[in-house]
Length: 261
Image (tube, rainbow, N blue to C red; front, side, top):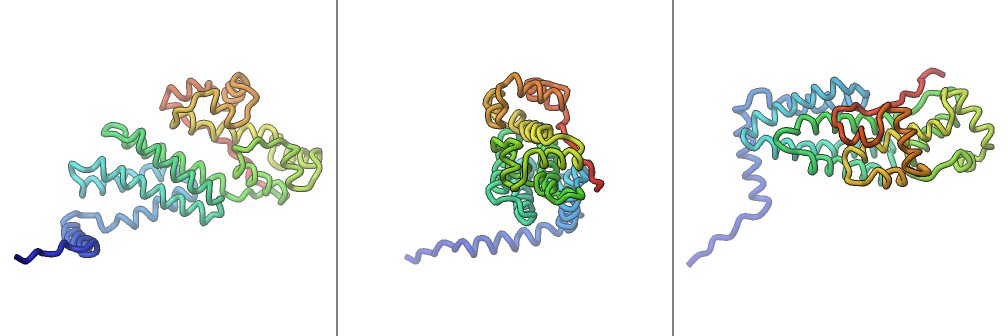
């Protein structure tokens, strides 16, 4: 008796590819998917958050046309793929590899923990918020003093380290008094304030998308204690860390450095 050999993986993939290619012809507009995705990546890169949210919804609609009853699973898969694409973009923008990898992991955890039938559009908005926030960190500041520009990028990359003004001054081989003066002169806030601003911005994602306690997050970002963390957090966001965690509709706090020289 002849036993038929099982098809190879490559043969299976080729068959699926051919079948899908034929099936997709019946779905109007699907040929524009990658064109729209390119637009989405452009909007994220240029920090056009609201437009990016609308564009991602267009992509979700196209996925829904094809997926039918399987829409949620397909959208979940696409969110993960998109997160990987954005992680690669961050790496191309010279984000440290470990941070780009951590970014991708954080996005996947967000999708896996919060993605369900009723929340998939909420997750889409949260992903765009996160993408834009991380991309904005990589936008080269345009201050007239190159050391200030480098300090901003250094803090953005090392925000979870226990940095002090003295540490940063030592890293750039300048005095603390000189660093403090030029930073405030060009950035419009003190260096200590900017460190706190960045820590508050980053802590928001752990509050909203992790199971870590507020005290643990406070320690992670090197606030001296939870009470101080709460005070600084409320100073910039107008709400406490607990209020931010408990309400998914409170917007993320973003601080915009001045762009002028």
